[in-house]
Length: 274
Image (cartoon, rainbow, N blue to C red; front, top):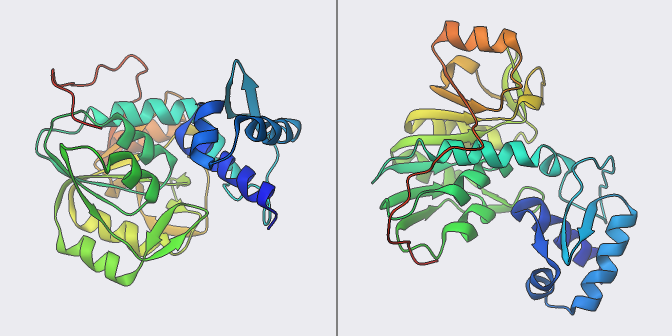
């Protein structure tokens, strides 16, 4: 793969995972000059994948471009509904209590939960995705347990039988899971078949299972089934959840929590080191 294409892949990955970034930050993270980053961003902007303004760049959520292979290996789905995902993650973080052991699943919405975790709660976090690990690795108030294995570059995730066994050896108060499809008849699904065993291990090792999905995931069926809707204790989503699902959740005892942009998160008076 050409170096520029590799670098543009990396830029798309950074923006998809971390949101808006200044050009100087992108240059620092990719190890090239700001001039080079501006040239790459012009290419990406011409393809409709990013917005560039006031010395910063972000993913274009209206992009219809999906490239597979040599360019833009991060899937389009990671750039869609970014605002909803951020608010869902922030709202879900308010469910975390001091000294909890929690599991954070793969995907962009669980990643935003990791970004919003309250400080100085003395948390233990089990994770298997590189972006969550990097987000939390230098927090002195978080004990990290990383389930490693084969690295899947398109999802930034590690997966292995040994990692699944490690998850099963632990117990968590809460697990926060993502999905790419929620259907009343076909259940909760993901796009990657290899995620199925890991997600089942997470759910079976946790006292409370929380599903984090934006409303665009409802009535969607993907290839890999891993749970029924009523296996979750809590579902956090935006207010676009279809009415038929609000009724279904109420009837099955699943607590529906609507994401609130104004949610106040518990914050210690002494921030943890980052």
